[in-house]
Image 1: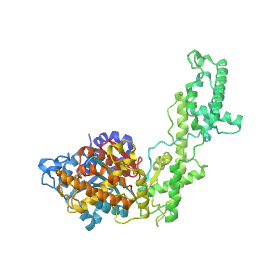
Image 2: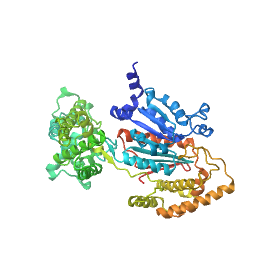
Image 3: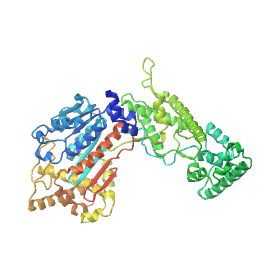
Image 4: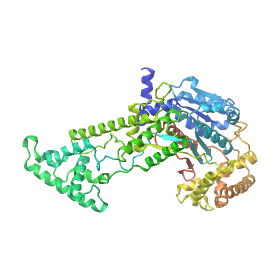
Length: 598
């Protein structure tokens, strides 16, 4: 078997899920892991298995005995060696097709490298900052905000797992979310669909074909009859019963006429279904699809972002942007023009559900939708030319293919654009109006915290898990003041001069533990006052739990959040599916999660 065939076989199942184009984007990506903690390594492992094209690990530490207890990708033989090198050696074997030069270990201080050689990080598609304190994360957040690089933060702190993502602008070509109502254009069919429906009217069918007519066609004809009787093509909720009775009586009457005039050569009617037919039942279950489908809110928002972009840049096409983003906005502009030219309707999708029907009728219906989807995509392709400037020689700066436009237009209702706020750590050096609003939102989510920690989480309110954001921030402030995390008896294993997140925490005395609890309460109080959060956080047992965690890492938690990071990284790199926006908190105490925008 050739290497190409082997690769197709290995990645076959995942390509079936997200497509060859997404796989290609992923294989051309270069991911950087900053600090090879257990959670970061778990995330990178999953991405390597999926087929990422290149990865770099930046870590200034050496492998210690503590690493052996929590990281599956180091072993005894690695003790005292560069952790970056050891991790790379153990991870690269999980991708048979990875070129040796694309698995890179950098045994240097990550933050020093950022300050002295920022261009080093500029080449990456995505940076994963793993188990780094807030002050380190803030540096990388600022860098990624200025360079338009995707950033994911993953933090394992005792029983807690935190994932936060940031990207300036995420263009999603196919979110894979199901629109509220798929528009089959029943209320306003195009000419070819109407012609097909008219050819399959009940009065024109043999009795043996009445139960084989697709419900979609049946509903178009029924809606036409309703319009003749009522003078309108809309059906209110109160009129649904009347519409159902009208359609059933009409279908039954036409069936009885067809039975009387049935040609025996077309089959024995004794073996045919009699009303009510299954196709009629299907039609009644889909009666909500008879209403005219409005533009999805996501599409309206996308057009609003396009207008803002045009007002800001005076153009749609920006030659300085990544090519994929250029294509996204050109296609979005063409989609807007298409909607204007087609009375507010999106392009037709060729996908229709399976339904009770004869193969002949269903095949004709599919062909009609496929032909219309092709025609709409062709119209979209022609519209894109207005937004692509030409070079000095008259050649367009961007060449759009029909396949590319077709994929975009047939999924137009699932196209999105997300703008992320910088990662919220609560230890930012500068306060802004936007951050103040985010702090207020966080305060609302958390609310008042009861003294007893389990009483708090027994309320089963996922938002409450956001309370760990200020608690971990307070622990980071404690570390800055004491050169260790609360509950930790020593300074831990040194990752680098700048990143000293401990891998191991010795047992502290009861006296020192209680002192750390009180010191951390004081810091939490200061932080809550500064950020407008409830002071009940400081008085709760959550502070004691934070000290008990001692800044350590649990591999079970790292495995969970590492998987989440890998999933989100693929979404952001492939521009498919709906990514996290923008915070995920896993609380291992009651086993619950929070996902939301902070």
